[in-house]
Image (cartoon, rainbow, N blue to C red; front, side, top):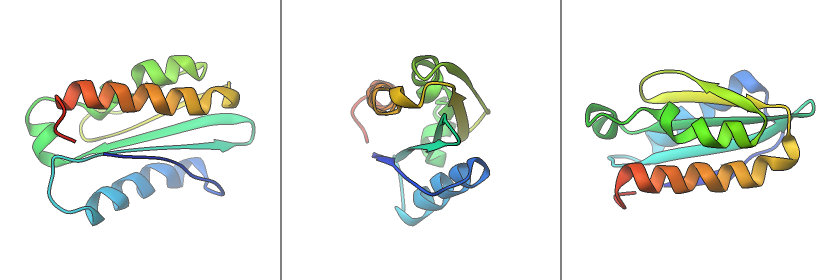
Length: 110
């Protein structure tokens, strides 16, 4: 599992960076969770390996609680999801929650 806060990235680039990072890590099971602050908002993205998705895990599940913590919501189906919120000061906590949820969903595989 990769969990990282990044800087200097636009919202539409964050999901792409999560997907690119996932692709570079090779074979699963893998989860990538990225967070960034942009224009006073918290941004999150999650990408999961195909084997995890085929096993029934949705990337949006990883971000649901984290997004609420950051003052927003999450969206996306399948192996790639994004979230945003109006509380950038909660980004570190949101990343920690997303990592905990990923660990729970992956059953310690990541």
